[in-house]
Image 1 (cartoon, rainbow, N blue to C red):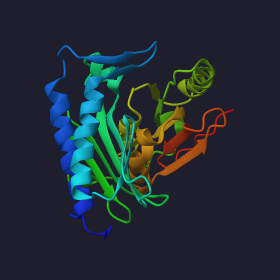
Image 2: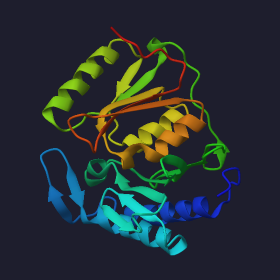
Image 3: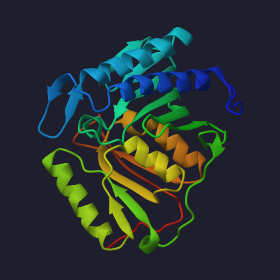
Image 4: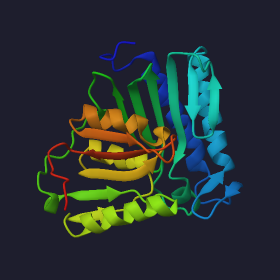
Length: 255
């Protein structure tokens, strides 16, 4: 794959898959939904599975020897060096409550390196795309992180996780930043938070426990747009990571 070529087959395929899934999801927005599982702080919809199946079919049709690793399961050749990382609806609770803030996130990883990312917001028809070494774009236009340097001028999104211990950590972080940043936000979609950092709408995003599929595409977007992305594996849950992403110039340190 030539990362400099904006119309590479992997990118074109990922964009088409994201838009197709977005069309499906948008068509169900605001309608009665079939719930697969209802938890105290989360919801799983049949639509999540349908969206991932649609994406999986499109990706494996174009790349039958690739692997799929998604929130709703795995598919394809799991021994492949090429792995698609898919979140079919990031922000499912928002979607369920008819809050129009959610997205589809698709990334491609070669060995251990993310080489492609696509995030699509079907309600606003906003599509972020990037390939390793290429220019990150929003609806075809180049993007860059904000240049704000003062925390007092910054808008910071803090993710609020579900488990009691992690929620306490997130609450402590929120309390620190809410008094120092211009504003703090809890948006409900990690992938869109990262896309917003990449295009300068947010200055930083911090969350203590997320999955790879939540952030894989957004990581590459933020880094390609001139920002910084840091993650640390959680010792209490090997499937989760703590993340912070920011424009690279604002000082996030707080006492």
